[in-house]
Length: 114
Image 1 (cartoon, one colour):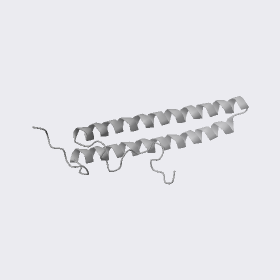
Image 2 (image 1 turned 135 degrees about the horizontal axis):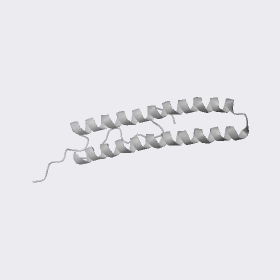
Image 3 (image 1 turned 180 degrees about the vertical axis):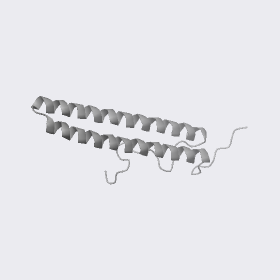
Image 4 (image 1 turned 90 degrees about the vertical axis):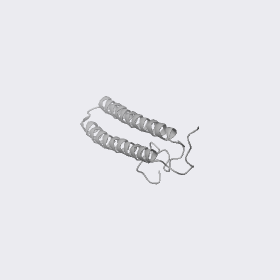
């Protein structure tokens, strides 16, 4: 006997719990990224003010860009893992594509109009 699938539009408790955990992980990753970016912005500004020649300014710019890239990578990795876990749970409990919120954009979490 095959297990009954729930009708489309109905979420199980596991799906709701997974969705909530996913959304919390994504928001936490985004907020952490924004905090890291703010700190990098401050450090970059200070480094540029203290730089005495063009080479020092270029080095500060390079380090700033590397720092932001690393922070983006960590944010994206966390969001990817959260998405995978959410998809696994929803895939085991019925319709994996039936998530009322859907996937949250990496660049648009917490922003309006972007």
